Image (cartoon, rainbow, N blue to C red; front, top):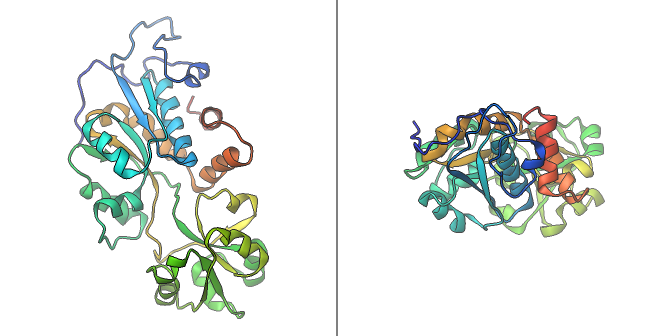
Length: 302
């Protein structure tokens, strides 16, 4: 499936660099293992969006690769897809954290896929030649419907399907455009038989939910306020939302060489874990490098 550049890169795991090297801007290439003097002859360029959560994931990728003996160059805060996808396609950037649903919609705007498995499968076919995705993680950063913990307990809520049994009037809050989106009020009615009123809350959606102005809120699934405010994200078993799992987007030339390292990261990155990483950034004010090193250590990857 993948093609690999024969540029003499170090085989994965041949050299292990320390956490101190992982915190630096790029690996020095000086192995700590005295039994080997080989170093990679080429560099993996890791990019990120201009979005703190995306940069944290990119830094995790970068440090994991450095720990496996690769030289890494960071090109973070590049911008949005129109800016960075051409760099990936040209080979100027090798690896980028992406989101399956949003990326699929970029290449296939008329997609009807919604579930994680269907979106991932369709994405692999939609990508242009020269780009591939490695294993997707279970972590997501997508639209989700949330309620307060108290409201969930009072009404026995864990899933969107449970909303059909709620006796009090339901009001959904979110950005103005949500009212017309297929996963808005019409989608709730079609998929789950749930009737809701709608209030355009814009940037104050979470605040309105906590104040009781609305009792259901549209919040991105990796928003740290889900954790800090104790919100309950309602499961979506019928696939109302287009799944958008975190996935490594890779230049096909290097995919084979880095797959084992990056897939190991994806296997450990969970929805709850991504929210916790974002809390460390927005609340604890830790740097992406600090957050990445701690996460990789806690998960036994460095």
